[in-house]
Image 1 (spheres, rainbow, N blue to C red):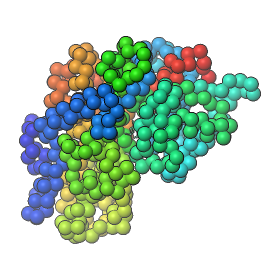
Image 2 (cartoon, rainbow, N blue to C red; image 1 turned 45 degrees about the vertical axis):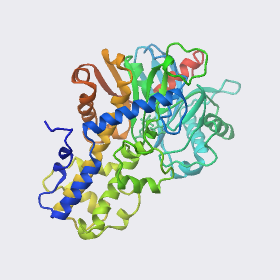
Image 3 (spheres, protein in one colour; image 1 turned 90 degrees about the vertical axis):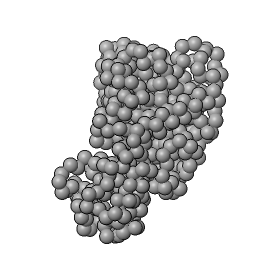
Image 4 (cartoon, rainbow, N blue to C red; image 1 turned 30 degrees about the vertical axis):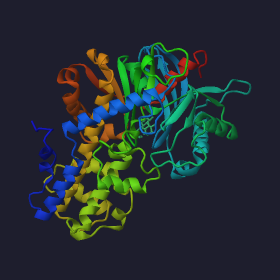
Length: 472
Ligand code: BG6
Ligand code: GLC
């Protein structure tokens, strides 16, 4: 088995046999800069623990936000009823009618709306109201005059500082959303006002992060769920923490547990321990939230392709690939989609014909040699491997923060496009975390589950606990 504490393990597989000395020298230093050895992961885990501890104690710009979510009751699987749920992810808005059957199963009628660029930049609240209006209309859910408004759980996949289970102020936008006049304001109020403007008879009774939704969804089917994670357009996690450890909680009842939203995308923005490269820096410098969400930018679907594009272009600029010629498409930011990386990394054909199609037909780079294609595959491999290893580091850090839980079987609910579509993502998460969490625990007690159907179900569960006597 490869020694994952030896930097050469992260360099040698990426050199190209027919490449020039100069090309291989460049690949060598690039691979070294993206390498995440076991010792590096140990450092990251220590950094995570310090940052989690500070964030639980007080709000601090240099620490993880560790946001108390007001969610205190674990799902039992016995919850029953039909609820409306809105699930605003990084790419899609889902409107769902969720039926919890009371026996750990559920069914769901949902409509998915791709969030338009215009909505991301300006009219998000009206866009949401319009989509909900369409859903209610199409599914015959509009209440008769005089009937009460429909209670709804709202999954909101951006950082909000919650002031109650049904309110929270937006701390910032990320994942390329930039809707004006929203930061610092209550997102439930903003949504509710749009509902009023559009005559949508819905009342948000609970708002939760998508990681909390994922945690609750997984917990409904697997009551031993301790953590919910999103590896998607963005990345983040939520976990059950003992109230006595949440020192910054000002509320009265300090018994039991509460779900804490880590907002781990904000880990180590100062890049003290993260393997941050010039290619990350190039992305970061141009980003609307420059210097923020640095960890997220090294891991998640929105950004990995862009880091790879930057790295490939650095080789083009030195005339080491594509005879020094890029294309108009490749020169534009964010054109090298992370989905292409997945296809490229999975291409095991001898002539790398999938890589050829992506480069030549999609990105208009002509012509490519087999060496060019292998270089691109290897660059994508380095960046993808770094992403998976950092993902495993973060998951391990959170589980190690509650070691007593690791004595029993535990489930982790996970959702998002990276987890679902990046080649071998789940398998690699298990493999990497074995080193830090122990083989016995990972092989016998840790279960990673795809929290299917998104976090809409979680929103319905939380809405139900808030509003037990109301059902649609
Ligand atoms: C969805 C969840 O399935 O996954 C959302 O329901 C979540 O709440 C999303 O935000 C994350 O995945 P992606 O890849 O769309 O960011
Ligand atoms: C971003 C958001 C976070 C969300 C994550 C995954 O990191 O800040 O709230 O959970 O994306 O969608």
